[in-house]
Length: 181
Image 1 (spheres, rainbow, N blue to C red):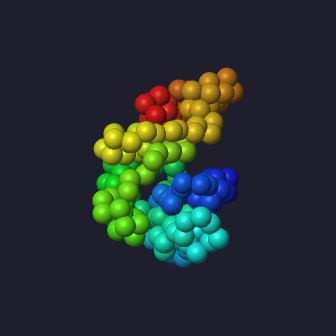
Image 2 (image 1 turned 45 degrees about the horizontal axis):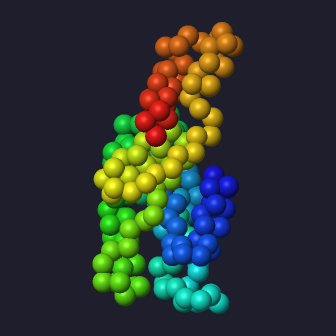
């Protein structure tokens, strides 16, 4: 997660980039740090920087936490699959709202849409593909450890069958999402 946050910060300071949003799940579980329940977290502000063009209050890099799935408990990534469309719906609402706000803030008179949708890990890859299609935007996908490789490695260990691996890791959902992404 740390390097994705650092990437968002670096991108937000690049010429021509107004805002970078890192979208993730909002978690309101009592045993989690309260910050995971905050809907938005400013990572770095680019407004008022000494630059050729002053940027407005919505510029910078942010973590945006989208509520989806059970609100009061953490779910491991393997258990988020049934809730991906709920995330996509919330993300789409955020993107539309923010695009309109940036359009107004920059005086363009029309929404300013993202340049690209970038997904990390398989579930975010499928979400990025769905958002990319809905918004007609390009997408990028970064797989961290591909499901096919994980499945092959676990099968070689010989401790679990393919079915057991799929039950534990939802590996077939992951592989399909990676291939679609």
